[in-house]
Image (cartoon, rainbow, N blue to C red; front, side):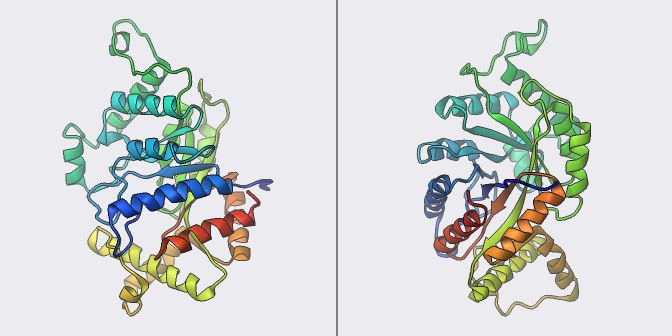
Length: 336
């Protein structure tokens, strides 16, 4: 597919930079949301992570409400709400409330992964069995609550998600393996494929989603986007420094199961074994780094290969200025 006009969006994980703190990280995310609104980005999503000291994004629904007060047009959403951590009713109420606060601007991106380790997930929701069927049942319940279903003899006869609103958020399912892509097709939801987690298999997942898609009351035609790590600069040295930092972050996550705030000087002399070098080569498929010309070419090719017209960008940098500049340079590439 030849993409005529590529839409760009942002997925922010609220990173806590070295020497900073959660309050500053949240201020930076707020500034970034307002800045991306002015630049013409389509949507701004925030993630859900727990028990990770370098990320301050544990409650996206609270942060979305805050960001709504600092933006005007950009869509705001979760990337995502990790539904097994929560009650479907409570999340339906949270997002109905958000839709009431910012009508027509709310996305509910839904994930199945816990966004943390198993132990933490079991404390977030002690009834979580981590079974596929339970997640499917939650999706059925969530949709029914949003539709205000009234089915005699069921819990939906007596229990409603409040406040009542005519509009409901756009529903997206997040996928990194392809399984949730089939769920999205079955439920008639939009799909966001996490290329930043899995650089392989995404093309087939999106293609199968479109093939199997069943129209729903909210969505008549399949719609998908993809998310990828990205960094743009016209300073080659800065690109290489940031790429090295991302290489280290991926390896640290595999080594320790967690992330720590680091700067380039902390990792510039890091040595990797032969297996880790292969992992670095593989992980670079999960990101696009380069100058404006390189970024425009790579993102355009990626959109065409996936047959999507929207890409979500995730950017980590040593300082806020470089993060803002990267998003601005990329926006200029596509005349947002």
